[in-house]
Image (cartoon, rainbow, N blue to C red; front, side):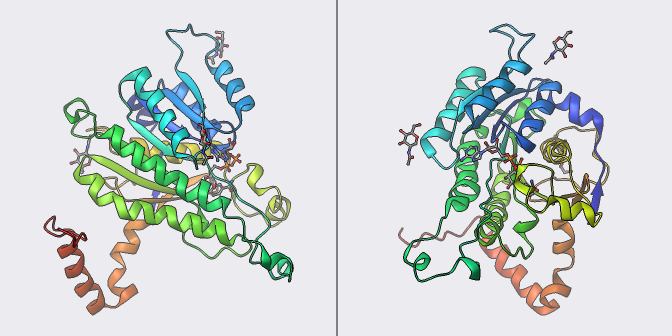
Amino acid sequence: MSRISPNQFLLSSSLIGLVAVLTGGAQGVGQSLVEQLHSAGAKIIFGDVDDKLSTNLVSALNQNDTEETKRVHFVHCDTSNYTDQLRLFQTAYKLYSRIDIVIANAGIAIHRDPFAPTLDSEESILIAPNTAEIDVNLKGPLYTTRLGLHYLRKNDPSRTNGYKGDIVLVSSIAGFKECEGLTTYTASKHGVIGLMRGLALQGEKEGIRINTICPWMTKTRLVTGIEQGWYNLGLPANEPEDVARAILICATANRSKSQRHEGAVLPFSGKIVWVGGGKSYEIEDRIRALEPEWLGRENSEVLKKGQEYLHSGKTSWDASS
Ligand SMILES: NC(=O)c1ccc[n+]([C@@H]2O[C@H](COP(=O)([O-])OP(=O)(O)OC[C@H]3O[C@@H](n4cnc5c(N)ncnc54)[C@H](O)[C@@H]3O)[C@@H](O)[C@H]2O)c1
Ligand SMILES: *[C@@H]1O[C@H](CO)[C@@H](O)[C@H](O)[C@H]1NC(C)=O
Ligand SMILES: *[C@@H]1O[C@H](CO)[C@@H](O)[C@H](O)[C@H]1NC(C)=O
Ligand SMILES: *[C@@H]1O[C@H](CO)[C@@H](O)[C@H](O)[C@H]1NC(C)=O
């Protein structure tokens, strides 16, 4: 892994005037993200299902602005609903005629695991399990990414050093580790990494960087059940601000010709950033470097040939034409 230390210049100056669209901005990590983007001078359009918290946040941040100068906007948006997300992006584009940064942050955890032996009974098995975590945590980012690519593709790369923009996805430690008691959540967060791995190479060719963060325990309402025992053990925890900063590290890592977040290897695309105890670590590059050890040298070499064939730009999965 590689520890990434934030460069304050990139976190502030490189965001001035940029247009950011994000989901789940009313509280927790998303709220901090809206606040940090606002203080860095960005324009923000966020979606959420909590209208009350969202409108309070908007009024607080726009308090010194006029109708013309306000930079924070809320659109009611259930991220699992395509129509809602389409309206979120359309609103942003209508307001500013461009979008630079897209962040899929909204997420839920259902703390009663339908796979748990204690919840298994002759009655419960008759009813389909709740899959809302798949809808919000996986289908949601899938919609966000599709819409995000569409709008980022409109950008003129000559205005932005050859790049059209950034997409940052929020997965979790549950995106790559065992996570007992949160089966559907774990599947949804593994899916988020799959979404990035499916798209990052294509995105890079188009000047769009797609990266994923994997926060470990973060002090929001999602973790109230396990919080006290965690602190008793002295285990590391993130503040929501730390996770929001890691998202902005991803969104700014490759935005300046001269400035770098220390430890960030460029091009910053297809990366996975673990956020733990307030610190950010890139972990995907080491997985790639260790592949011959992980899969065996021969497997790794022949896999590389297959990958090169599939990514040569001369193949298509579509056998119909
Ligand atoms: N807290 C942690 O320890 C932790 C760890 C790893 C990953 N994460 C991820 O971080 C992200 C942010 O979570 P958080 O900890 O800030 O939780 P949170 O509950 O404090 O915030 C989530 C926000 O998303 C909104 N939201 C929920 N469902 C929505 C929907 N259908 N459409 C739109 N908005 C919706 C909520 O209203 C809220 O504003 C989530 O994707 C979560 O899975 C959190
Ligand atoms: C609005 O202005 C007041 C007074 O200058 C300042 O204290 C406050 O932080 C400002 N609020 C925002 C959201 O910028
Ligand atoms: C999605 O949201 C729209 C309103 O924005 C609503 O009319 C529609 O019924 C919703 N769809 C689903 C599947 O909930
Ligand atoms: C991003 O990184 C790549 C690789 O180092 C570099 O070629 C490109 O110019 C960088 N983009 C910007 C905007 O600096």
